[in-house]
Length: 179
Length: 151
Image (tube, rainbow over all chains, first blue to last red):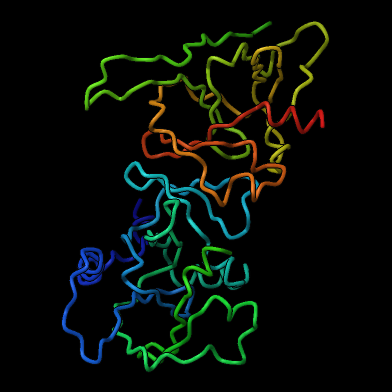
């Protein structure tokens, strides 16, 4: 339906997919000051980042199977070309409220994306609203989370860094997955 | 009108002389919906599907409403009776979808975040997941529900 099509989030830009592919293959481009490539993504209007090396792929979210009684941090299971991926709800883990979620859903006008992760025993993915860009982050420019953030939220971050879109929270993926 | 039907149990089928393209042993599953979710039971364990408009001596079966058990409203569909050795039980579900054959190796153990160490009432009844087309289904162990009822 036309309305459904209009609600679809924009496709992941080719440049982002290619960057993920390069990171997966272990290829490294010469980077000034050994900057680390991060994928920036949005939850509502806030921007977050995780290292490309921890990403297996990015795909549009379809067919999420919610699990009755699952912990709040688990959104459900997704069939990713035959592989069953446990999808984590980044919003729930980071404590973003339902009220904000609904507001943000209207604002973002999209169904979201699944970031398939690598380096964990089970196939895991992270649900996000939309993809922002690839950012080359200088490790020296990473700062601790602002002291104004609640401690329960700050534990999920390695730090923050300033990008054009604002302050980007760099996720501690291992901590996030542990819940 | 009595409207009960029995699902034939195909059970697991072993194979020999497997090749690279051999899907390996398969299991027949009864797929159904409950609690807004696609679920499955081994068809070999299903002994009867009693439709919701059926009447029988003794009234409605003494079973577990699966949607209510999982905290998702009430089921309004048929009752499914299962049996494993000397154990038996009845579950009320929303709808029978189909009986399908599924390669055992296509089933994926439930991710660790959803298994026993994180289990509460609802989670521990599932032990694996599979796919039907693009859809994910959950393979459940009905005996775990009975254990909780008895325990």
